Length: 188
Image (cartoon, rainbow, N blue to C red; front, side):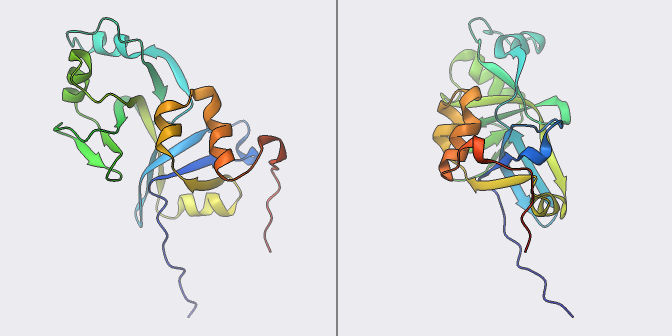
């Protein structure tokens, strides 16, 4: 009986799309992994802005105080695009908040949106519609197929880097220039 490789969680890591994903909805994306265990993985795509802004979302949800919130809303992934996810630094006391790390949290409840509208929410946050999800073993297979490279996440990139600069900034964490990426897998 062959030994099973030990599971290694990619929680709090970036998935950086490789050229093998060209033409897919993940082309040229950076995804922040919020959860990864033996049952699968869940993440938020950080660099695909929609045409919506937070003001429009708050207005659609009839949350008072929406004016002046031009924060862009991201397309967080292809799963449940009708659900909102807020990545943020301050823990707060919102109903549906899960810690990713001691610093980074993800919330899904309407009360955090109300807090944002009222100016009492987290100061650093990203709002996304939908998420990226993988079944058990699926992400590991995609990694073996050279679809992604991974690197430990960096909160400065998540919260302070413009979306059009994130991909290269994540690659720089590995010392890689985008021009040197290849779609060829290198398996020994």
